[in-house]
Length: 285
Image (cartoon, rainbow, N blue to C red):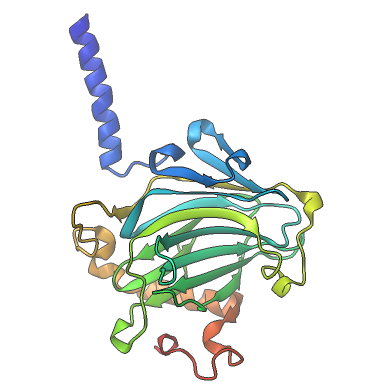
């Protein structure tokens, strides 16, 4: 009897170990992530497979990965706050733990009055230098259901994906003096009050009568190169996202990317002459 029980336990352990080794999905939140702030505004569902973070007048909330990463193909399924979400910023992003010289790669969902489109802003900081905003309207209602948001980050390019469609590309142009994110970064998700800038440049304010504003997250497995005390080479081609096929978009991806930009882009720092009389060097192909 004891031997049979031992075999059952061993088999169960091997199943779990195999699931983790294969990059299993549907992991509980607390395997790879922890709450950063606003604990009283965080609710777990479905045995940790879904997390709700919310914001009211007292506080926002957020969570982050337990590890820092040096490259990867990071993802999250997100359903945004519904109803009147003007002034509310929901974010999914990577950020280094450095201060003035930090690296950061941002998805920022900018809420709006009910019935008006959400704006998805992307931004990139490298060695403390940001001001690289692009904004697009989404071609679906991001409050009605979950959608997939992904960030590919390797030594050649950063690509933002929305439902597997390239949404933005930032190439590594360090050879012409453009800073490129290279520091270990944590995966973060937050919701907070940005009504001084997020909607119509801050003219449209948060309507607190609709609070709390709730965002939902799923898919807590992580595809990335964790930084450990051992000297890890996160640019190694042994990681599949660093292989040559991920150094640039395919021709099919490039075509879709250009279509999305032409149809949905509402702001691009590269053509904002009020901010840059000469476009930054990374803006040139």
